[in-house]
Image (cartoon, rainbow, N blue to C red):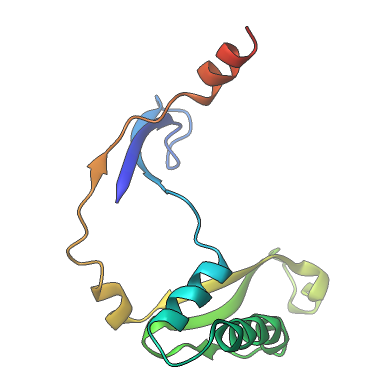
Amino acid sequence: MNYSVVKRANPIDKSSEPLYYAQPVWSNEISLRTIAQQISKYSTLTLADVSAVLASFIEMLPMWLKEGHSIRLGDFGILRLTFKSDGKEKEEDVTGNSIKNVRVVLRGSSEFKNEFNDLHFEKVIVPDKKSKADKTGE
């Protein structure tokens, strides 16, 4: 896994000097079609069959999550909704309007997390976005 080093404000003490942090560098995204092709290649299912199952699964996820379900995905982990809420002094003042920042969270299973125990990290240099923009503007 590649990482770069970035300088940013200390999240614990914003008044202190900025610190350097490791930040993941991702390569290309893998499309749903590529996933379906790989699954099809290593199974007896056709690309159309795998694509249909994946599309149906993705279509059903929001419904199940909105109903308040946690979705266990085998040894992959559990998918669920979470949110933040504004704090109120009185219990009765907490309403649905107090809820903010709804997020979908995947809590990886211990089996899945163990797959990354031997992960190797390699530092890479990422071109500065500002410098790149300056060069293209010349």
